[in-house]
Amino acid sequence: MSKEGLSKSQKRLLILSSLIVLAWFVPYLHWATLPLQYLYTHLHELGHALVAFATGGRGITIAVFADGSGVTRSYGGWQILVSPAGYIGATVMGAVILALSATKEGARKAVIGLLALMAFALTVWLRGDLVGVLSAVLIMGGLVGLLRARTVLVQEVVQFIGLFLCVMSLQAVLQILRITPVAMAENDAEILQNATGIPAVLSATLWAGISIGVAWWGLKRAWSAR
Image (cartoon, rainbow, N blue to C red; front, side, top):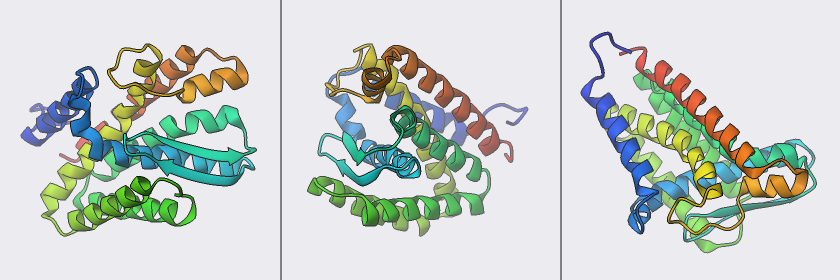
């Protein structure tokens, strides 16, 4: 980070991210973030699917629903690794995107990487709800359009996406503590608790801590070149 303090674009990034978090606490305001929620959910569920496949899971399918929630179904696999793979996987993706955005060329590579992940998930595992398929196609179209935008805009948007993916993992804790206006079904921490006995609030807090640490690493990398 610069010794002169935060630049205007860095301040905008932090303000926008703070507004996203604020929206979680305000009834109905969270609907304004739904397009971003779709992107996060696709990548979150892809994290589950990849780890399920890597640990021997079969019959894997991903569904993303109109309210922005999603589910990954599989048979087998190591639940103790599959459950946190959504939050942690999306966080790692966000941190890598942040790190890549340190340079203009890296930001474009991050967009191409997101396109590849979305295309892979859509082709291999995305099934079920039509909203999931349509949202994936629209997200991919938006990413293609972003590649055609001005270089500076690409870099700023990519940094916002990266930080957004990281902070979204904080929702795990908020959902467990029931302090968000969003009515959610059983989440990953509660699923892990049922499977292993590990307290859901402990898992969610750990995942949130990892998210904050990884996001900080990504931001430092993203802003080190400025």
